[in-house]
Length: 363
Image (cartoon, rainbow, N blue to C red):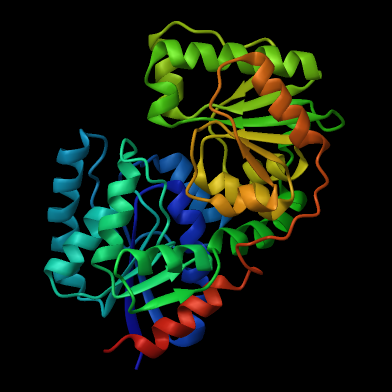
């Protein structure tokens, strides 16, 4: 008899990281239902992601949309609970640290449905980040905790959580390794942007701490522009909707060395990541992808939930808005040998996760 797993997601990074699990599940006779919360929903962009990743469309949309976090989470809990009441899955899987993760986990636990948390145990110890509360609370109420590395297992033990922990790697590796080959075959983004034969950097930036304060955003853009000019590096900048709104509100201009684009599909973004001299980001997932693809990374934050990237040398932290400091960090990373070991697994994380769930889930 097939077991029924509901996967709750609401953002594009969750689609990317859940895709390997969704594709592996049928091999272990697990039927998957995707529930999309609508946390960050764009019919065009999300449709592209599902299509590119060869993942089935969601069976349910709850269409919450953008609200203040407390309202958004409350609406998600109510609407996801209604879907779960009708769907009656044997387990729920959530991935990461978004509001969709917290709401999905709370809805499931109140209905007595066991929860699997993919990417459990990550901590930044920065409670100003809304994601920190989401991941901590999700870990507390999950039955199965799938950790990327032993660091997260040790952290959960320190917090008194000892049962149901599995160190499996990170599905970001599964997706990056699998889809990078497809991206090289199918994406012509470098040609479209006119940078196919040129060295370039790639910038992604969307964290509230970097983009919501107009002065901070202006200072970062100015410093990055000056640093990239000194290094003779064109910077490709796919502009996140949140960042685009912040730039427009503050009437800012992106530096002349930047090439701004609309948000990109996964294959286009992966193609650029794979070819870049350097990645600049405040994204957690892109730190993992850069490490996997052996592209040096500078993370524009004072902390990271992925300290493994710092330990192996694929990544450095740089929270400065001083062009000299940024330039030194960027130049040092560009010159670094790309021979680090990948701490996040061998691309078979989804196989491990699905096998464990097949053995543990009860119909």
